[in-house]
Image (cartoon, rainbow, N blue to C red):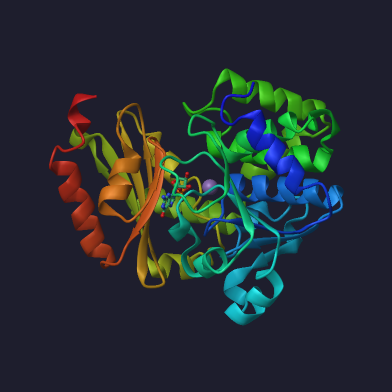
Length: 343
Ligand code: 5GP
Ligand code: MN
């Protein structure tokens, strides 16, 4: 199964984990199911091995994932001062960077990475990793970071010993990053890993239900409103996008993560090859991009919206106003640069 790192890398990791260590696990801003699932699985595993572990998210995690095992122990960096964070995390022995390969995905929490002298280990599946760590467990072909971490556990000889809680966290990473094994990043290997995780005693039905069928009425009403009032369809360009205003967040009392899944509704529209959600929040407009086939969502995000991601799922942000960002996106789509008419 091993093709994204060597047994030499595993031997280095093993050596680092021989004695109890002080460890921090950090994930990207606005963590999703994969960042949280992978980070929490790793945290549970390391704690089980007798290490002292802190897990950090730069920003709040989505409310719809608040049932994940161990999630209450996640330190939300934005709720603490830099001094307090450095006091707690500044002198850890090991720093695991989970589900990101660009330092700027930590946004305001980037100082934790920059100021740390710890031995740094990346566990990730995004393209073009930056050289900020000492050891990389990295595979851009993996459906999720959870898939990479599972293979690390397997190579460490721990596959048979994964607890149901660890398996639940990893399975959540697989399910959310593949959209229930539906996206084209899903491979036979992904399914084999999912099957192995099921053997560890998780409840797959319950996990899917908690992720997808556990919405508040507010959230459902918001989706209905967004589809009827905030969806712009450009059939001739095979594109559709949602524009979510600040006041919509207030009106529907949206919690962190409540817009998750919205882009998929735009993409579910017949003939759509590119879908976007533009979200007006704080002083930025955040973009979620989803695409089909060879439409490069990640290139659009990287080149025009300070972001990146995968070919069919990417994100970024703009400092322009919401209207200006919408204009920019429409111009881009109409420019023909992305060949949306010719897929
Ligand atoms: P989402 O739309 O769910 O926020 O993100 C979709 C994908 O794009 C995820 O794989 C996520 O990791 C990636 N992504 C989102 N925002 C950014 C960003 O600002 N920079 C980079 N490099 N990737 C991002
Ligand atoms: Mn992620």
